[in-house]
Structures are given as structure tokens and as C-alpha cells.
Length: 79
Image (cartoon, rainbow, N blue to C red; front, side, top):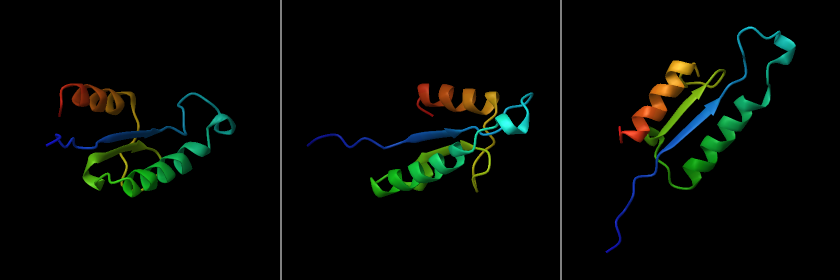
């Protein structure tokens, strides 16, 4: 029988950049993250396996450099 892999995803959406004027902040990442999360759910991803780092998205962690680094290192270590 084929092995069943756990589906995991990391979504990162950064709209606000410290040091940049507000008119240069991005608008689309919030929508992109929300839409991608919906697509992942439709494709069988469990909510607990979709980690979201985004500003302006309910339930998401703020996408700081430290948070992004922690998630990618954790993923590399299988955590």
C-alpha cells in the first residue's frame, strides 16, 4: 500500500513594510492568503496543517522575520 503523506502548508502574506510610506504597502497579499487557504482546504488540507503568517488575516501570526524563520526552520526539522 502506498504511504500517506501529511499535507502541510505555510502561507506568508506581508502587506506592511516598516520604514516604507503607507502608499507603498501592498494590498493583495491579504486576499491571496485568504484565497489560497480556501483552495488548500478544498484540496484536502486540514486547518491544523495550514500555518498562516500574514498581517490583516484573522487567526494568523504576524509575519515578522523571526516568525518566518522559525516556521521554515521548524519545517526543515520536521516539526
